[in-house]
Length: 514
Image 1 (cartoon, rainbow, N blue to C red):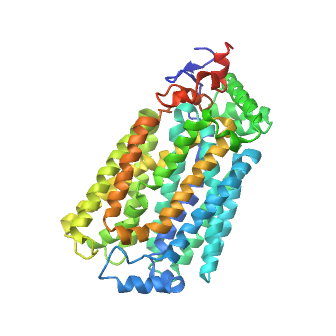
Image 2: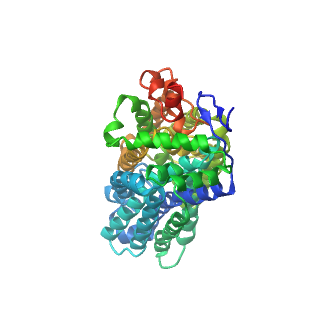
Image 3: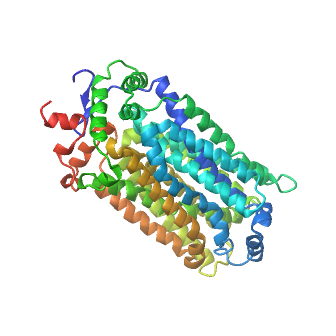
């Protein structure tokens, strides 16, 4: 040990760092970017189940749902126009992610967060005041631009500000805020649905401006990350920020490694071309497949079908909103489990345990639904079977919330070298939003066509992705992001793509005897 630096399990360096009030504050404010993402997920799902909203904007969907009330449960909400209202946000976020990558790299992480909050606020105003479907869709597009900026910048900001030993916990603050946003939206939906006159949905859509205001104002008071400041030539400011977030003046080694990584990054003129090089293939593969797999866990199908199941056990006409509140609570508390465990047990353990739990839950849910509703979608479930189904839905949501939910954002944000980090995060966001759009636009049709087999379809994907994690994801807990490539060079498969002489920062200097 020299100068407060120790060697970690991966053979790289671990720098001094602890949970200071300053780093806690900065990460708390930045993670509030998850509120806008979560609030939209919760509020859009709630308002599309409100009769007053459907009557005003989607009367054909309302008529179809009423006609199918006592018949096919699989097909009652199958409408491309309705799903376009929800999924148009993700299409906008997909397109924005490429612009956001450049803004994040050139102007810094904090200004990318600011842009996200500002455009999301504008979208919330449009949606709250909407008078036709076009106005709704335009508002959703602005919301999508905000989500694209926030999802690009916030995970990067958290990973770069956090000490290596606490990076997982602080980064998952983004997912925790997402779950809080979902729960808050669900509670607002549950309250506004009973407002006389049927205009409660306007309150829900308009209140999206509140989390947007939080991240917008928060971005103005936050410092940028040391990595971003160095990359833009503000070295003195970077060192001051590093001292404050680490809680010690002994940051020379970490600062030197950041400067070295930045100098190498500045020599890269075309990060989008360089990220395709052989030495970045492991990171690129993992950062693309993890968000791809995250959307194929089937979380959207489970969340959609839960209202029907809760209605069966006697929650009444507000069953869909009550179901959302209950699953939202499970989602939030299970995310806290991930925060507590991710830097102790590691990423792989949570992925493998959560994946196995979700696989079993999907099989059980699919089987119970098949036994009760068959292929016709008509039937009645006994109270005992309904409670058993609710139990496995909650187990499924919990497994997602402490594994694929938060880790789907954490791992891609921490595996790339500085010179391609913004491009890599943009690819991860792009894949996530592309799959979210495709699933969001098609899963109601898939449910109508595949019936209970859709649950087995997603269970099959759970088996594939859990096997992928077991074989191809190295453990990254406690490893400084400047030293991350060392992990890949030691992996049984990826080691042939990343070798010791391609390491950045401290790794490259050690190999040269410095």
